[in-house]
Image 1: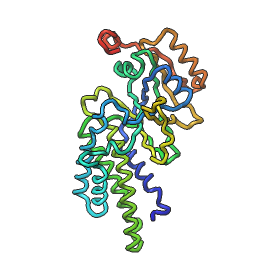
Image 2: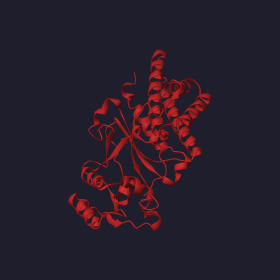
Image 3: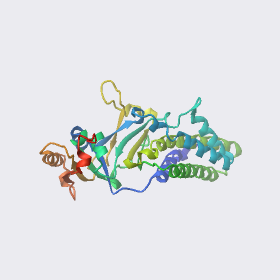
Length: 322
């Protein structure tokens, strides 16, 4: 029924990305091992891992109740098609007695940080300080994908519940407002055609809101984790395109999705490559050789290479930090 207006869902996705996006960071840092460094420099993509592979399921379901409450509030204060859309979203958001906003759609996650000097990140993701940390310029981190089957965006993780409520409410309000404008634009249609259009608009809005509810659930954590100051690159893929998903190993235990950093013909814009405090002697020269091999030294300015020096209390192996 939508015909030439079939881009409506894509428009809603873009509205949601704009609504959720927080304050940008000049540089975002990605902690990794030597193997990860070599792969990123060569292939120009990062691995976004399925959220279902998380070690702590509490991270997955933390926002489900919040999303439900926001949708209920919107349902109570809206009418007509918009209230019906909220009702449909709530029906889709339940799996028996369990909420499933965060479970029904697979979201692929790559983690970043606003700092390259976080001991916990060196320990967890960079071989206990023996690895590397790549600093990417946030404004050029990910080229908007030309393929509508993949929705990609970078967000700061939100730890404050009040901010979480405001963001998800504002996001859904924008979707409902866009839906109302879309239907009003076709008010000249006959009654039967208007009903068909409203049904399509409801289906498309619910699908977009459900996808973004899943993404929002991956953008939130409780205040217990606030010291991490984490940023996440999130990707949602159309189920029909799941063939792109790869396996971490032969057993396929950790599905992941390659997310290109900028256009395939362009080099990712890197600010620096930091060498871990416990990396072997000569690691700086190794990084420079790799940058030269893959053409990064021709960037202006070229990425700086620097070994990280953390305070003893953060780098000591005796206290279990690194």
